[in-house]
Length: 292
Image 1 (spheres, rainbow, N blue to C red):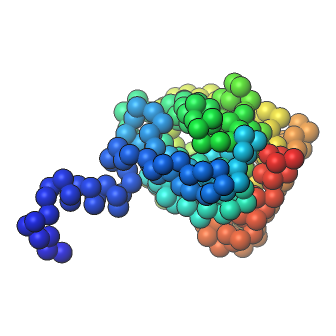
Image 2 (cartoon, helix red, strand yellow):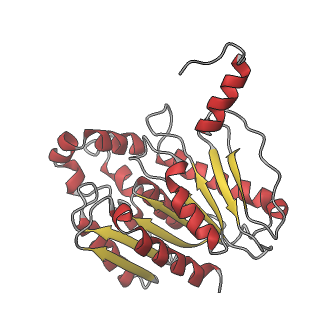
């Protein structure tokens, strides 16, 4: 496309920034009145480049309005909060304040699962600091994600939420057992080398060198009494469906309230195949635990 010479460099930069919502410090729009819905875009919650979030604020909110944090997938090395737009909008339409967050990729220096847990904690703190202005309850949080984001959601809810603000958690095709032979037989590394690379960078060591680190990073070994909703498919080539059944089993053994939704004909793209079913069930789940 030819850009007229009258366009200044600063104007062009602003256009790129508005399209990308990723690299520029945009001035957030005015917070809408509590009687009106609105979205605040690309707010910075921490010092790193990808420490950004979008938040949908529902109409008729008050100090008791719950918050849901959504975390995107992408093998911990790709992806963006904009992929959670449909989920964010659907949940906001049901009366929740809803955050979609970006997080640092583990392919970046000095970034592993502990750093990702700290970034979620920074989002929780950011919401606590903003609650009185934006009007919601920062002590009443739901957490959910897809794939890598689901893994992060479960791990934070079970092991890294010291103030116990997360009252319910949801996992859509999230890996729960990083020690699973499925990931370490060699075949997976060859066929899914990008995902396997993300897994190794997430834990910051090889499984052969330090298997205990993979256990520490696995939600199934860090259980806590947080109501949990699970969505998995039998034909998933990235998360062995047997992990889902093991997770269901241990949650049952521990007496942790949970729901297990299993789709025989779906794989890792489960949410794309059944968005209405998934988001309807997720909405009902969070309504039960955050609004009652």
